Image 1 (cartoon, rainbow, N blue to C red):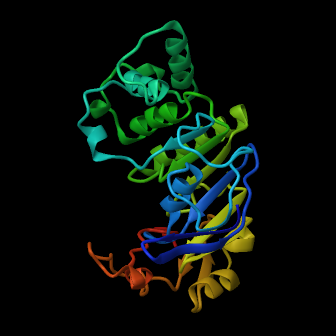
Image 2 (cartoon, one colour):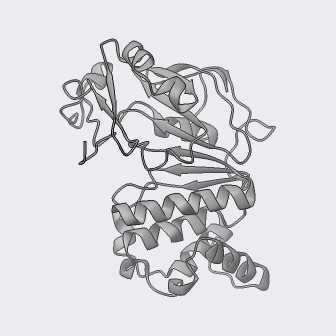
Length: 278
C-alpha cells in the first residue's frame, strides 16, 4: 500500500498508510476499537475501495473471491449454537460461493489436509457447538487455509480465549507461516501473546497509520506523537509491554448511533497490553 486512505460516509477513516507484507512474515494491526482495523482487511479483500493511494495484493488489484487470500473472521456467537461439524464447516470454505453440499475426492483430500495442519482432525466430526473456544478457532483456521493461501488475514484470532488456548493458536499461526510461507496479517488488541512472531506492526489511531518493527512503532515517542499526549510504556520482568496513558481517553465504549466525527474520544481500548503481574 502506498499513501492509502479510506473515506466512508464523508469522513476519513485513516490516511497516509504505507506498508508492505513479505511472504512468511507476521504483521500485527493494533489500535482502539473503531479505528479502522477491520476496514483495512476489507480493503485488502476488495470489499472497500481506497479513496486515495494504491494497493497491490499478490501482484494484482484487490478483488473479491481471491482464493490466494484466506480470512479468519471474528468469532461469532452463532458458532456456539451451530450443529454443523468442524469438517463440514471447513468444507464450506472449499465450496466457497458455490451453492449446495458436495463430496468429491479432491474436496475430501483438501479438507483433510487443512484439518491435519491445524490439529483439528481428532474432533473434526463433532458439532461446533460442542467444541471449546480454542477448538473452534482451530476449525476456523482450517476453514481459512483450506486453499493454502499466500496471504492470511486473521481478525482477532485470540479474542475470548484463555491463556492456554491463546498460546496454542499463536503456535499454530507460527506453524502455518513457516510451513506454507504465507504472509500473515493479524488484527489484535494485545500484542504481547503475538510478540515472538511479529515482524511488523501497523498501529491505527486518530485516523493515522504508523508502520514498522515493534520497537520502531511501540515506543513512547511514536505513540505519544500518534495520540497527541504523553504515553508511557512499562516493560515487565516477563518482557510484556504495558501502555500507560490511554486509560482516560478510552475509558468508555461508544454507544450505538454516536457521532462518528468524535469517535476516537469515546472508544474502549479493552485489555490492550494489560498484565496481571505488572
